[in-house]
Each structure stands twice: as C-alpha cells, then as structure tokens.
Image 1 (tube, rainbow, N blue to C red):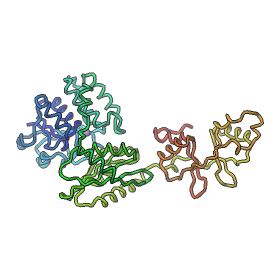
Image 2: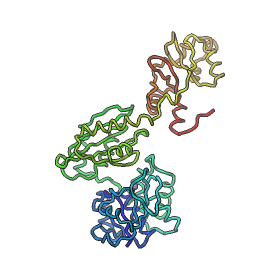
Image 3: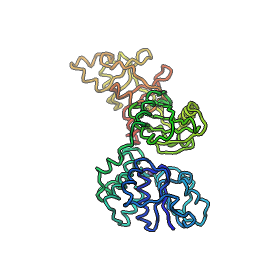
Image 4: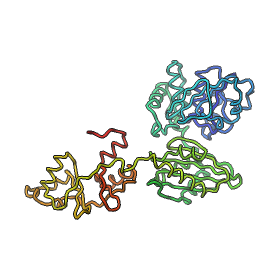
Length: 433
Ligand SMILES: [Mn+2]
C-alpha cells in the first residue's frame, strides 16, 4: 500500500500537495492528520466526494510499503504516521520546500526552497502533461497563494509564478480561491486581537521595532496566526510576537510575523524549538512564563547581529568636505571633478550642512557663484550612526527627502552613505564604477 502524508495543522499548500501527489502516484492513498486548519476543514467538508482523503485510523499502517511525504521534512510534524520512521522496509519519497534539512531520510527526494510546496508538484505534473480539472487547479492555486502571500512573500521564487500562471491556464477559479482564503475570523479572534493590542509592549531591538503581545487563552482557539498577522499590519511594526499561554496546560504558543528583511522569524522560532519561514513561524514552549519567552526571543534577535549589514559596511570614506566659506564656483568645480552629486559642509570641524547639485538651481545670477556655500547649502543636521541598519538609513532619507547621510560617531564625521549605496544593498547590485 502506498500512502501520501503531510504535516499536522494542514494548510492549503499541504492539502494541495497531498492531492497533487496522488496524480503523480495514482496508487497512493491521501491521508490527512486529525488536526487541519479551520478553512481546510471547511473546504474538505464541502468537497468530500471530490477529494477522498482518509484519516490515519482508517488505514492499517502495517500494510504501508511506500510513504510519500509532502510539505514537511520532520517526522515529528507528521502526526500518527511518524511511527513509520522506525520501519526500514518502508520506502520514503519526500517533496518539500522548507529551507533547512529535516530528519526525514528519503529514498527519493525533491527538496528545493520554493515559496510554496505545490509549485514543486505542479512543475512535475506539467512535465508529465497530466491534465488538471478546474477544481484541482483551484485547490492548487489556493495553496500556492496561501504560502506565498499572493506571490508577495520574499520567499517567492520565479518558479512559483510560473506554476501560478500554469494553474490559471488550467482554469483555476479566482472567485472560489478568494472565498477559500478569507480568514476564519470570528468573535473569539476579534477578542484576542483586542487583547493583543491592549497588552502590547513595544521595544527597539537591533534597530527593529518589535512588539510583544501576551494573551491568556482558555481552551481551544483556532486561527491565531491570522490574528497575529492582522496585529502586525495594524501596529505597522517590523515584527510581532504573540505569546499565548493556556493556564491549565502549562504551555505557551509563540507565533511571530515579520516584515523586515533582517529579522528572520523562521530562524528565531527554530531557536525556540519550532520552525517557519523568514516572514512567519511558530513554536510551542512548555513550562516557561511569558516574560522568559520574551527574553529568549530578544536574545535570539540579538544573537543574529553579526550576520546583519550595517551602515558602516555601506558608507564611503574618507569623506570629502568643503568649509562653509568655500565659494560656490569652487564647489561646482569640485563636484564636477569628482563626479559627486553632493558633499557635506563643515565649519570649525563641525558638520553644518550638505550641499548638492540640486541646490545649484537656487543660483539665479552669475554673482551667486562667488557667494559662500553656506548661503545655499541645506543646513542639515540629520546624521546616522555607523551601527544603524540600511533600512534605517533608507527611512531617514525618505523622511527628510535627502540623498545622503553623513555617518557620525562620537561627534566625528567618519563616512557618508548615499541613496545609491542603500539601493545597491537592497537590490543586491554591485556598485557602479
Ligand atoms: Mn508549505
């Protein structure tokens, strides 16, 4: 007997992958864990006759000869079928898109980092010219959009977009998709969101604005990740960590969402024994009080510091400067010679402003070129410290509409970072020579 299996708390990407695997391996029986996400549960109850999935207790595990695992690479997340890990005679096939190595050793592996796992299977279906029904295409596209945040999560690959296009050609229904992905968001979830917003503690860690939100949850509570996602959007901070404690069970669930490139939630959650993607993840922690959990997360964020790029890595130095008495014609010549678009202005060794080509437009008469730079410079006091992040530099530039930031340490001008430096970093470009 061949069986396809996937992770607990099954989402649409996992269900889509499960069904897609049965098209590639027609003999295989799709088995879903007992716990599935609420919107997947609702979907399955309507589509019972079309997608005939079984639960682990409907099959005899002793008869399984081949196990096809999709959308997960850890035995621990498989639920009851994880017992098969000790049966050497069972052949294991793995289709997974999660970054990092898990503990499932498979005989056949398709493991590539993609935005969604279904992308890997769609690529195979397309290669084998297996036609899809519109309902199958709709389910697959739903999984794809769920895991890639409508192709907008940074983990999305070009292959995901190709798979999405192919599924649309196979007549995936976008109206149905929209209604399937509408979050299961009821009265209970509204109350939790309200409590999260009220209990919010906001701090700056490594320059990121991070919000911790502790909430006690009584009994079962679905769709917490949806609530955390909304909470981050409302607060508009770099990251939100919802710490949910159930008083009776002595367990905390931590759910994180991040919108900042340098704040990898998956890494942080792995540090807590959980997992996830750069933008989203969760972990279950036993017998820790929520304040300790906050400290652990803070330590994990700080621990990543070495890896992150700072302004001092991007800045240019030594810095060419002019004194505030320098005539404008000299400034013009200097900028032309060096092909710079601007320079900082100093007076008595102190930074007093910045002059750029843009300011030349203020000169209406020829005599203006004889005037000192201080008459035309922007008396800019906005500077940045070398330890700040490129994102913080970009924010300052946008806020003050300036193209360059002097980098100042202990009152001393040590470098300058330009809009072009920051752009090169964000787009991973090589600086122009
Ligand atoms: Mn997935």
